[in-house]
Length: 295
Image (tube, rainbow, N blue to C red; front, side, top):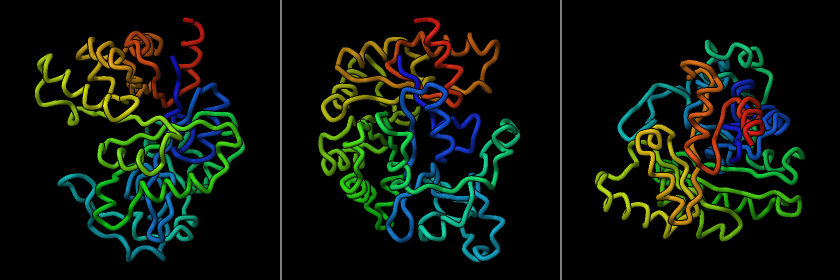
């Protein structure tokens, strides 16, 4: 079972920063996962959200105060915030990362304001990735496509210009959006594994055996694996074997020690017993230690 550093080691450092990614590998992660969104001038930066206030210090930049606006953050939800598509890469580089869950993670929050927001180019070029496995998630692909940002095409260009293959790096590309993931697969080719992400809202409406089988057959016809919210696997213990029967890789997300009810070990063992091929974890060191001990 593989341990994936979710947005790096984001239980210890502000998420999606080079410092968080490097720490995850130091802590024993088998791979690290990052998220990408586009800037106004067509670059990809490593951020989870299209809005910026949760994970950067943008509110402390008076020069950007007039760009706060109402914007779409979900299918039907809006919020007042600063949005990545309104900023150039040069402007993004003036921001610094902050901890999303400051109250829960004060040890990470003490690094607020210290780390830059990396571009995907910078992330790929980082030497600590040499010989490692990187997982790149395309965020909000359809949303950005409607705004005129072909994220899959931009990703294909950046990967084509990087020397990641010569440095022994392997890739997985993932998305919650099947259409965007299919486009990435078409544009990038067989350079990576392609994993379809599933949350509760992405589960089939027909939960009968036939309905689930048809849903999984369709996924297996298009992609290499499924990254699925662990709750769905806890609710249906047969899903992992059904996915494996179709040759799909199965990754569960996300293990966070703050959600442990009893002991942290018991919490992690619940994830491990699911029988997936990998687990995304915010504290990869603790999960990696337990996995190594059990093996």
